[in-house]
Length: 178
Image (cartoon, rainbow, N blue to C red):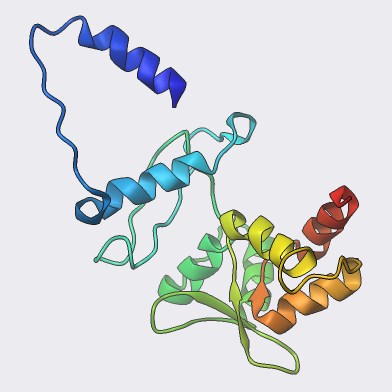
């Protein structure tokens, strides 16, 4: 944000006259969503030409593809594309893997990706933004008891959440815990 402010102050000297209009978040949900998505990415994770899919709640048409160097691809997007539009990768091996994994996934009425568990109800698939908070809340927060990796993974699923690489992320989170 500081770099943006510095650039803005340099550019403002080129204009003789300017005004600044404040648009409340409630009236500009698309810009707010883009700002939130951009703030999730660390500079070393920036992938040129990355595409991200915005949720139905943000843009009425259902989704928007945005070309930007400040956004990253969410693991859920390829499954949502497949379930909505039957879009498959060109690589046959990736295509077969996607179809196999997508058999346990479905979209709810709001377009949220859910996964069927072996013995229970649907669980919500989380994006990168929510993972740390959910892990912290279950491990250390109000329902936490500093459990190990295996029990933490099963608690997360029992609470109703899932994401790709759960075991790896949980192992790293527990390792960092004091």
